[in-house]
Image (cartoon, rainbow, N blue to C red):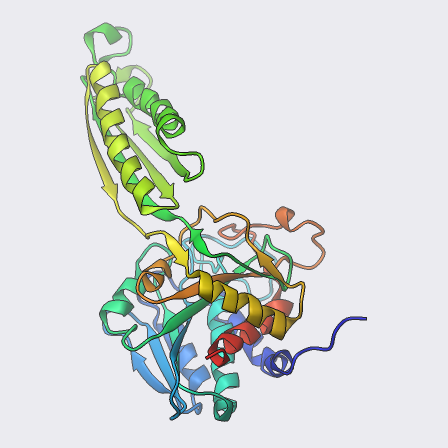
Length: 394
């Protein structure tokens, strides 16, 4: 016989219809980047009448809403990211995206809806709270550094701890997964241009082929990782785009490569940056070419505070019942700009399992960032409950 639901889960279920409706509205009308005026307006409408002190972003369409209890206590920040991905949806959902090339394939629509639901739930129970709850509705998480803009505008002033919930369709529905230390990797862009000497494809000895040099670099980067980076502090370098030449019988002057660099520590991140420059230059010189390497730093490593992770575990056990918390054995090579918040404030980001019904093995579900991603809406009230639980943990 299953244990009875906690009062907080029961309360979260009461706002579930509104949460699902808001999620579907946002899902059908996704926006990209830092300027999301329609999403911002829907958030403001959902917060109407809750007695919150609302501040709108100056450089982005962010929303910060404070619930001030009037009683001494910590300021706890809860985040929900708002933006979609540049992807065309291919699902049968009745509320599928109406905009080609725009899709909420990472679950940010559900994050907004769950956070808005938590704001309503906590506002209705403010007599049981103390301190201040800050609701962070953030645009531009998908590579646009939205959290950094919000921090520059004073988001973290007075904040004592911070939490975020992120859905995961490849995780058992309703479970909470978290870990102390690195949770997500850093993410940097790699751009390499190799310059040789063009010529006729029939006479490569009169040319200096940049494509051959570029191809050799890819293998050299991977060898460098296995020989120079510790296996227990790993990194990933993926070359995802190579371009060179115009036709089949011309050796081009230049070839370009683009990729990503991921790491779980700032030390390894710096080491890989330095090694890539050295290896690229050496390979280019070996082939009689030259090269330029440009590394664009992206999100830092997302590091969860161990004490805050322990708090997440205890709140998950008390709120959702024992057996629903999973201690993540390893960090994830995905990246998160909640890292900027956790660099300055102790806190944690947790994953909420949202594997769709009918999928026996969560690993078989369409993953986040897939054009076929669908999530299990029946778990959203659990996300609302966890947001609320973290707010009430102070």
